[in-house]
Structures are given as structure tokens and as C-alpha cells.
Image (cartoon, rainbow, N blue to C red; front, side):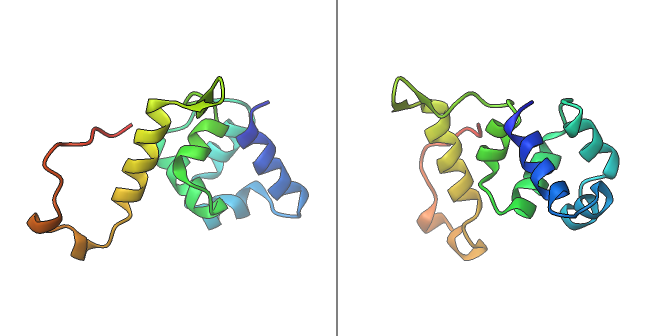
Length: 110
């Protein structure tokens, strides 16, 4: 069982049904069921669940086992750092998306 399954079970143990989790998160009930069964979901579903659970999206991807651990031998991995940077940059307000603030080198998404 992965950490995302455990987290969803905490929601269920707290009195929510799979249907309620689906309605509140915007993810289909079938996807919730599949995640609980250990199956992979679409990336968009993980992002919606991250918003619902109020967690960073990369953390939900790691909880589901989609991304590797963020640390290896006590050091942050390059992929983790890039994913966090991309997450932060993607949440900037539209007003920050100007040529004046634009990065000169592209940052690839994780």
C-alpha cells in the first residue's frame, strides 16, 4: 500500500465516502477506487487530489509512487528540486508573466 492510498483511507475512516472525496476533489469515483486498489491514475487526477488534500502536487506524485523519493542519501535529488521550482513558478500570478520577469533559459517540467 502506498502513502496516497493510506491518506485516502484516512479520509474514508474520517467519515467520507469515495463519492464524497470524488465530488470534493473533482476526480471521478472510479479513479478514487482505482487508486485505492493500487492502480495508477492520470497526472491531472493527482494534481486535483493535491489541491483537495492541500498538499504540493509533487508530494502527491511521490505518495503514489509516480516520482522517486525527494532525497537520496540525505541530499535532495535534482528532479525533486526542479519539480518544486516548476510547481512554485506555475503558481505565480498572471501579472508575473511578463517579458521583464521572464527567465532566459527554459525550465523543463518534471
